[in-house]
Length: 504
Ligand SMILES: Nc1nc2c(c(=O)[nH]1)N[C@H]1C(S)=C(S)[C@@H](COP(=O)(O)O)O[C@H]1N2
Ligand SMILES: [Mo]
Image (tube, rainbow, N blue to C red):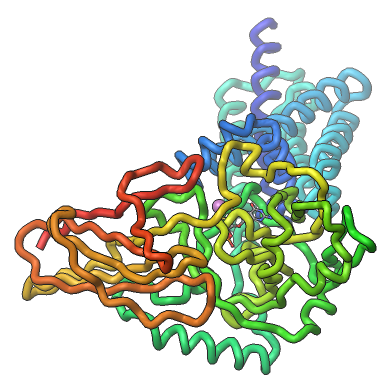
């Protein structure tokens, strides 16, 4: 008898986990990786929020995208486990109070609450609940001795085992289908092109940049395509902000609060600007440095309409993902509010419907999904500054040398192509050493774009001989050579000279 009870408990626990998996898969099938409708998203956000800042900073710095996988996995486990517990509780209470039908009804109710309350998304919650109830129902009809009328509760062991295994495999297969359906929803379709006049103007500027690119087989040119542009986010799930309901407000120490909507924004005379972004958290020769053509409007005039009061020195900018940044008001004089990227509407992952672009500053200041600009009277810290980063100042100078930019030809000549960036200071010179830094030679520089905050490309060729320690270094527009001393990204951004061993 004791064995029977233990066996029941075990089966209950297994069925609960299976119900949790089925519920999560069902909801994912309809919601996809949506911040607003997939049940794991708010749990995940909560986990990130409760994790101490230094640990978050460390994880992002050390593991990059893998750090995100860590907390998503944890969130997934919490959700499946929580729904499983709800199912166990429902089965226990249901059986005690009214037998199998009540047990089934209660588990449906508990699972529905677990799916619906965190998100408020009805359809994924319904499909998830039905999925869980199917698991519990099969269990009830075929396996659970308490629910079977045709026996006295006894089922031969191997028959029970076979059926349990069948249920488990069925659930796993169902989860696979749900995962496939849900991830199809995510596939990043290219966004709508801009209106025709704007698109033509953007395309002109894009070809201007293409003409100034240094061709290389494997390395991109002056413009990073939208789908390849790096992404750095505090949240796993991008906020889904509808352009039709979006509003940007100016609040705080102002004469009058002002706001604009998407219609106002896109109705203004647009500008097309190349702006390069670099993440303060990237490794010295990392890949979080990209350039795009942004379509939007300068923000200064709009801010002036609010009449920012003179005693307040800084602004705090808020976003739909609860991100915020604080920087001096004067920085806004050159800031840009973008709704287009490379001739298309801004993709969700880069801040749809609108993002801020702040010339010369690290990526983190370029707030995506921007919703509010508050003029504050006292200095505060931004999201990353609270976590120890110093990313509110101008970018460090860097010259990159990626493997994709190195071409070793059959005749032994080596071609190096790369990008160099120094924010508003601009790039005046890139030098290459092929002997580990003993001697230096000037690389050829691409014709600069007229935009004020954009990278430049360099090209260099040499006759290779066995093995070379190649080093690159840039000099900015003020004549300052980038410092040689290596520094890791935290907290001031990586610096130093990039070097690479090239075998010929
Ligand atoms: N709302 C919001 N804006 C944000 C961030 C964010 O997490 N949330 N990340 C910032 C950081 S750290 C960088 S480097 C840039 C990256 O912009 P991208 O993802 O378009 O490349 O966005 C900045 N703006
Ligand atoms: Mo960043």
